[in-house]
Figure 1 (spheres, helix red, strand yellow):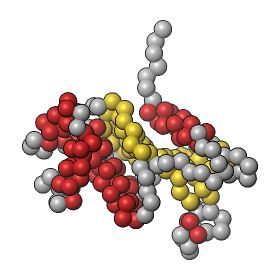
Figure 2 (cartoon, helix red, strand yellow; figure 1 turned 90 degrees about the vertical axis):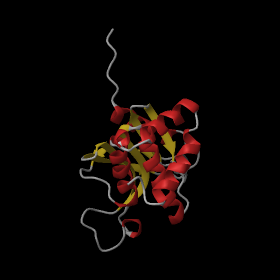
Figure 3 (cartoon, one colour; figure 1 turned 120 degrees about the vertical axis):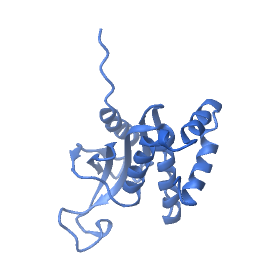
Length: 194
């Protein structure tokens, strides 16, 4: 019997649907997650986003997670409000015809990104359901889209940065990835690895 090849996108879409199925109340939301696939196998990072200051820290954590995984493929899953097409008069979260969607960003390389969305269907007396996935085209911009792109560029060039590949390998070998990622983020904040 031949084993089917691993399809990261199919796995991620199923994971997003499974995440909605674990909710307990009608108004509950899924936690945004970053999935990485690459040299270090499959990784998952749950991302809590309470305010704008924390969002910048989350973006840095995304870059570090992607680089430490030496990811060749990344998927970011979150919920967001989307307005109707070409509705530029108000922000999507304030548009009267807005729709809540689960957004899935699939970055396969530094220049290949696909965006998918599925509507969140809310109910008064039970947890939400997820509608059908639609391909949205294009790439995700903004803070998190930029973090994914930066992380992918850094992951691709880990072996080109003196000492970085050795340091990451030692982190994995010693089981100190979480602590070492904090140092990595500090270096990013101080101007990066130039």
